[in-house]
Image (cartoon, rainbow, N blue to C red; front, side, top):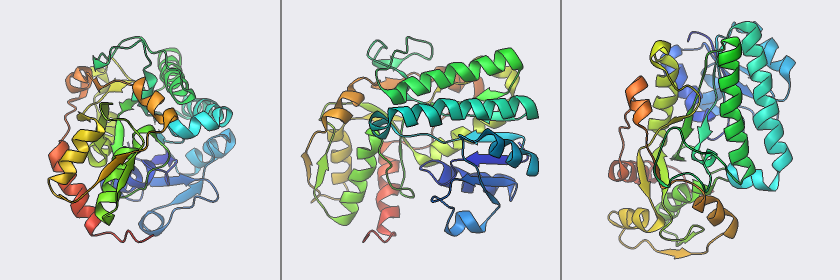
Length: 318
């Protein structure tokens, strides 16, 4: 990677990944955004930015040509719960948009990173230590677009030789970017409530386990995979990566070690609960560990302590 375009650079992952990439690759990282979601602050000040709507193939091609882009991080997507209420838009962004990126990559010789998700699995997949290669029959539009994206990326690699790569992200927890409508976002909201001293109303029922990951590990995975030796990669576009798995009671108990007065109540959201129940409890990430040396650096306790400390330093009044 030398010249990089991040599409969706102001989103939940993109805003942090763009800055992390600039630490490694300097100003050769272009922040792609859509009008109304312009880069601000450090993101705007540390490198170039360009209007790149993923549904506009010509816009992507022009930006790739202008900045001599050799690697595209495609992070444009609607998150799980939002995608259920806007299913046609979720497909248009997630699949029509991906096709635009892949076509430009085919014509220009770019590598492409497109994240998948634990949402790619469905009720038929094993819940515990979900294998790398198993049945994927999701019943959400979010999951359908993720499985389709994995297959489409595989096709462009095998048919056209496009260097496509991706991971199945767990739920991501961050102190930088606020939640954006994902099923696992309760695990971010709970930290904000604890930091503010508020009672947390949990939308996910106790006993519902899901894979989670601290954002610094997720960013490192996205960069490490794209830097990996391609000759070692047997899987490309759907690597399971895992870090920790917990239910609301476990994360609540962990936070109470450091905030003993913190209170959680349940206010279960039927839509998010049904989505969560279709997802794995924890994925088996053996292939990622063997093929590109993936290993998380944070566990539940180290993440909890860091989240609470970082949020204590933020202005949470808004």
